[in-house]
Image (cartoon, rainbow, N blue to C red; front, top):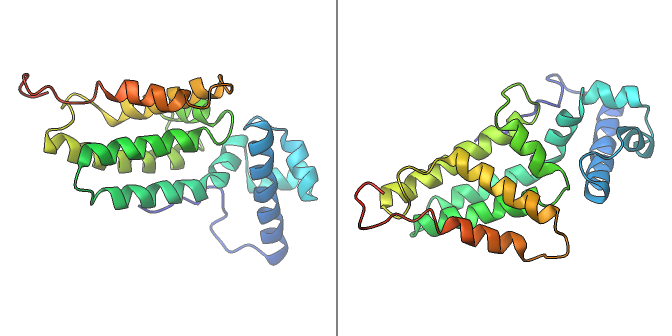
Amino acid sequence: MAMSTAATPARPMRADARRNYDRLLAEARASFAAHGTDASLEDVARRAGVGIGTLYRHFPNREALMNAVFQEALTALLARSGELEQAEQPCTALVEWLGAIVTHAGEYRGLAQALMSASGNETSALTPCHVPLRQAGARLLARAQVNGSVRADVSIDDLLQLTNAIALAAEQTPTDPALAGRLLRLTLRGLKADPAAPGG
């Protein structure tokens, strides 16, 4: 699916503006990794060697900056979903992809909460991240449901909220690195269709 460039101006940037944009992205990525998505934007701008006004010219709000930072990971997740659409076992493919979502959401403290909030807010600057993930996941889910391995009443919106909730729980319990995997496995047991109940 096409990637959004909502945080990038439509017309080509001048060379100096592009350098500022790239430096801001690099510093934001490092700051979010070290301090979470609520890291100081003033510090991001200072480390990039620009003023806070320059940051806001490129990224009008924190969510727009987060959207730009996460495009690389989003691209990888979408590429993986495309590969998994060809998998012989649709349910296994869906589970693997949801695990990748949990891993991604856990890379930056605060990302899971932000993605959960964006899911119900079409005006969020993070919507360009959420919508493609939802579409990719819906295709994997549909394959598993057609295959009969996943219940018909399961929705992709519920699954994405669950995966973000699992990532958030793991974020709050850093002393237990295996927690996310355990919670995901426990949750996904409820996905499987009951062969004794027609229609899932």
